[in-house]
Length: 481
Image: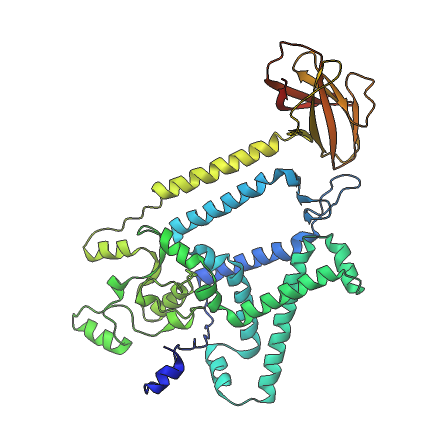
């Protein structure tokens, strides 16, 4: 039904309710300290890692972490990834997914509450807002009141700092794709390339809008993880839980004391609303599990502060399970099952994939050879009766200096190799490959006339470093009539 149709029927109510503005209150406690520490560590790494240097030898970039699109390489300290090694990226994606699944199986949306970029930058923007405009009650009072010079000044300073943080966020991301000190110098001299400026502007805008204005809307509506997490979680996963077995029935503090002195069973919750006031997404944890809860634990700190003031035990809200709440109501002890089928499975996959990637990196050579056989024609019979197969050899030299390689046929026996456009006077032609380069050469594998040749047999080409003698091989098939 459209709004016009609803109006014709006499119903002038809106089709949807606009989201109320959330004013999270400042809170102190264990989980708030953990969030501050993780914020400082993660943002410190993100902002300053591009400036860390790593010596890779002459004529090689010395930035510790660099995505070098121009030369099609990714540098991570001592690790150098080439385009041909895209499987490492696949492995990293698998590790990221399995780690996220494991975190969810252990403690719900703990990633969202402590490490998600949206959460981290929103926390920083909240801190800036409180610095200039005050805490929850003061901000609500100012927003409800008239515009004054003081309010305009506070708003202006807040947005200036927000834009500065957003600009440095976008700038830091671009620094991972170019030499950081050089690019910073160019920006200071207004000589930065347009591509860098465009991406800085895009990332500055997205950070400013998402962390400054959309905030909880990103978590509630834009992010798919809450829906995925809801399908992956189970009854044994620890989540921020209101322990209603202890908190209900609720009464005001004075009435609770009076009823408790009379021997009545009264819950510890005094309905103060502090757990809702500090929540960055405006969730009332007492209503049960919610897609809006990012499991940040701030409501735990707020509730513990209240419990301490009214002389009641802490952790009325805690990382717990609804299963344990039901067990306590039934007079049974708590049962925490962190080690179970799915957590073991995730840990095994993480260990296996991580182990394979480490083994591949440790055993990786600084030279590699791969071949691709011509498909049309598969072979050629020359005038002297010999059989010739054509392959394209890809030689990767990961060393920082130029190297010379000889190439020869290891199998089938009796075959020789000829490099198109090269000097083939020797049995093993020499191929020069520059530093940190890939060279592609066309190679003929020639077998002397032999009427007993099988239609297909294994072809092994051997590449040998002329200086060190180190060698590597590549396998294909040799075809004959």
